Image (tube, rainbow, N blue to C red; front, side, top):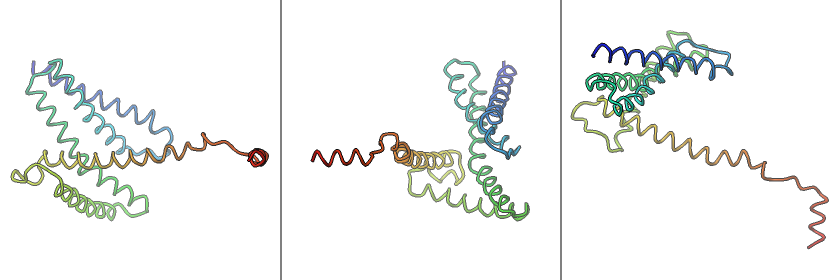
Length: 192
C-alpha cells in the first residue's frame, strides 16, 4: 500500500510538472523571443507543488492516500514552495536583472546574494507589525514563513486590485464617449 501511495505522489508531481511545462512553452512563451531553461524549470516546479497542494485537498476528501503519505507530501510541497518563494525566486530575479544590464556572472551572483540578504531582512521585518506566530520556536519556522508570505500576498493582491479597478475604466472610457461635431454643438447652442 505504501509503495502504491508513493507511486501516486511521484506520478502526480511529474504529471503536474509536465502540465506546467506544456502551459509555459505552448501558451506563455508564444510572445517572447527569449526562452530560458531555468525559468521553465522554476515555473513548472512552482506550478507542480502549488497544484499538488490543491490535489491533496481532493485526496483528503476522497481518502486516496494514507494519512502519513499525505502528511509527508504536504510537508514536501510546503517546504519546497516556501524555499522557492523566499530564496530561489528573489535571487534569480535579481540575477537576471543584473545580467540584462551586462554585468558578468560572478558579479551578478555576488550582487544577487547581497540583494537576497537585504530581502531576507525586509522579509523578517514585515512580521514585526503584524500578528505572527511566536519566535520562541525560532526565526525561520515554516509557520512564520507562511504568515509572512500570506501578508505579502494579500498586500500585493490589494495593490493590483486597486490598480485594476482604476485603470480598467480609464482605459475603456473612450468606448462610452462619442465624438461631438461642431454642428452638434451649434444645434445645442441654438436651442438654449
